[in-house]
Length: 194
Image (tube, rainbow, N blue to C red; front, side, top):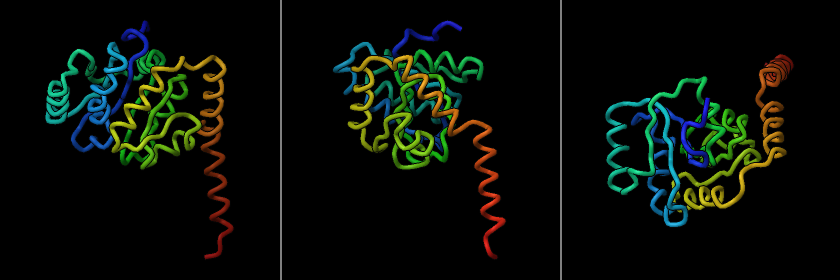
């Protein structure tokens, strides 16, 4: 699949519902005016289906901040198209406040995308506590904007960086590793006194 947008955009993939607003996409949108001062051509792609109520809230926020020309709401993105979205993004940004374990972070890392995530939930575990991406305070729009600016100001990941990330993802999150972790947990529990 060709690049869905010109390369170098910021990306979030999430379910867009009022029950999912903790994922922080509204904080990314709120940080855009500050970011646009330094990067006037930046674009934010927010992918995922959602509730009418939440989509209306997001559209109102986009309009109120004057960033309509810098944000695209894609709606649902089929699984087979996700790698192209990740690979052409400058960064995957989801400063979540209460994510359990964000599989989207692992997907983004596997695709070689730089990642910015919240530091207040399960996201640090998915990012190997910072090895796979930048962790920020998800309530701090300035910190989110600064992290995005740092990614945009620096060159993209090298082939070596990409290979290292893939190895880390494979080492820590492959199905083989999952089975090994489960076996270890079962062994520990079998040998625990009751």
